[in-house]
Length: 51
Image 1 (tube, rainbow, N blue to C red):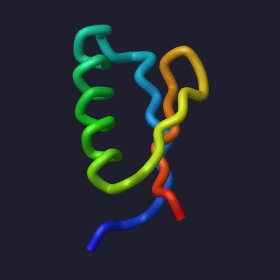
Image 2 (cartoon, rainbow, N blue to C red):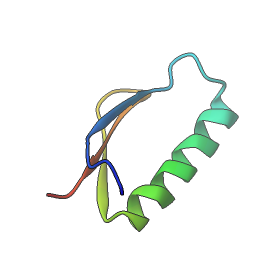
Image 3 (cartoon, rainbow, N blue to C red):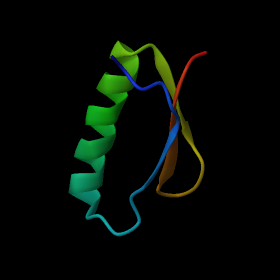
């Protein structure tokens, strides 16, 4: 069962290429779960399910 909670992802300490791959992976995961991703800051993202 999927745990339907929001997650804040801070990538400030991650190398640019690695952060890009993480965002690509999260984007696919969120799409598959019918969720939403919003940019909160320069390298901070909110990943949330659609209620």
